[in-house]
Image (tube, rainbow over all chains, first blue to last red):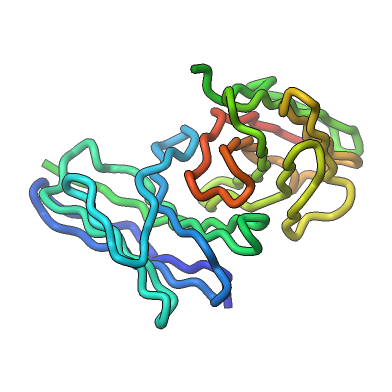
Length: 110
Length: 114
């Protein structure tokens, strides 16, 4: 089993759609969680941290379920500019080991 | 504030050679991590340095080694290059070694081994 697994992609959605990504992790001692966005041939950029209570940033909502060891990202009212690869990231060992998922590719079409 | 800068941006090496990649961390960040990203894959954690000491390592062989300097800049060294080492190498810095505030990535060094 991979340490961090994400929904296989790609996701093809029309503008304005709501899309959800899921991510599961294997290490119950994981301590911090993030979603990153990576555009084609660019470096990953932090989209948002994920907190146990859930958190929202504009059109983006992240949830963490420690009992089931999964993280989710919800994007509402998708824009063309949301087209990118979304990477789930888990830290454990006090952040001494950082594991990225393989990423989920999102295409938003007009 | 300046971000994370990496050099060189592109590099071509021959199998068996050695390579050194460099990274300057973002101002105020004391932790640097290195990642290898193959095409179509997520970044794979190589190791992390905190205040000049390695304090976390992924599943990479010993021929991948690194250094962190007093100014928190860092180097990644790869010996005895193999064709499979061809990838994008990313450096990321963070405010703390737990990475609680997330990581800032450089734009990477694209290494091609022929």
